[in-house]
Length: 316
Image (cartoon, rainbow, N blue to C red; front, side, top):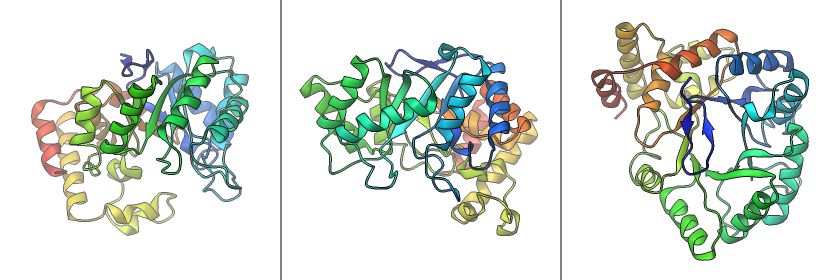
């Protein structure tokens, strides 16, 4: 499995990142352990999570995903250095615990380290923009954590080009570490928020890019072609966004490339991302070993220029 350099972080990550939002939500602890074992056995190394995962599930309060990963690390006997863990801070954890002020970052990182049962986080991301907190305060807090060895690299999620550019300027002007990684929403359907100025900035500044919603909440697997198909699915309520003329045109293009390559639509959608300028690795989740095998195949699937052009045109 060919690892990928993550911008200027010094980290190398697997070409597909396991989306840990499913742990403690659509996947129970036992299944999570089996998936994580299979992930590493397949030569993939990188797991994405956040402190808030999966607070939206009934009975959860946040921290469930990190807790499961931590238990797995402890019980599996896996070497910590063989796993690259990405987690985030800033989402609303309740009781006023949210945002990117230094005091909350310092508490939140300790909570994440405890749940993950580790003494360092490979990549720590600010989850959302916080207009109430200056970039200088947030970056200084991250700087202290880096110097203490609690985090190895920093990045951000959900910043636009102007926000990311401003954060880079503050880092330069104040002599602080910059965001070396961006985690944007990007897939065959959702393209406008990344393509253009934001992608150009990431390429120019050598910022690593890890995309989320890489399969558009499962829409790009091709199994949802009508609202009827979504019944009983935890993701069903998300599908209304995609079930339109453009969405169906994208599914038709994926199916056409599937016919040419023998690959599944999900594998093709991930490979498309891996071939896009500026993208380091997409995040994708799996809830079964068969889905995980599909992600492994996607990491090595090669699409020719004709297939890329067909997909680009369908999602334009």
